[in-house]
Amino acid sequence: MAMRAAIHLTLCNALLCLPLHAIASSVQRCEDASGKIMFTTLGCPAGHSTRLQSAFNAPPGTRIDLLPSANSREPARQRSSGQELVVVGTRDDGCGNRLS
Image (cartoon, rainbow, N blue to C red):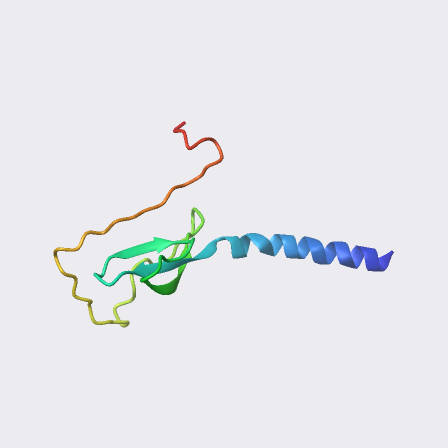
């Protein structure tokens, strides 16, 4: 009987920790030869360079610093003015993606 209670306690503790891992996810950053960038969870097309990035979606009410601190300076990347940022993707909310 004590073994069964220990298994149930371990399972309950594991389920309580599950939401902590569900907050963060990884996305792939795909860049083609002309410098166009695409973010996806499905994988990059052929001919694109791939880099894995962590995406963190903080739960409501969480206070985190969105900007880096003044001490962590990185050289700014130069962006050509002719490039356009294109975001491609869909969201499936389970309700036919209708506005409510």
